[in-house]
Amino acid sequence: MTRTEMAELERKVAQFEYEKGTVSNKIQKLKSEEVRSRQNFSSYRGERKRAALFAVQDSQIIQFRTMLSSIEKECAITKDELYKERDELSRIELSMS
Image (cartoon, rainbow, N blue to C red; front, side, top):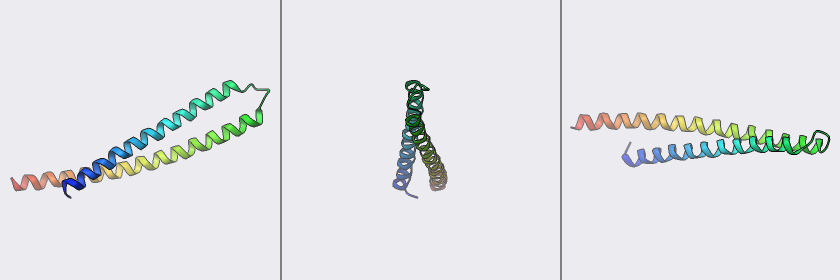
C-alpha cells in the first residue's frame, strides 16, 4: 500500500470519527428535546400530541444509534486496515535500510 493510499485511509478514519460525533450530537439533541417536551406538556393536556412526539423522537434515536453503530464498525475495520498497512510499510522500510 502506498503512502497515498494510507493517507486516504487516514482521511476515511477521520471522516468516520467526525460522523460518529455528529450522530452522537444528534442523539443528545433528541434526548434534550425529549426532556424539554416532557416539561412543556402538562399531564392533562396534549396527551396524543405528546405521545406522537415521543414516538417520533424514539424512532429517530433508534435510527441514529443504528447509524452510529454502523459508523463505529466501519471505522474499526478501516483503522485495522490502516494499522496493518502501516506495520507492513514499516517492515518494508526497515528491510530496505
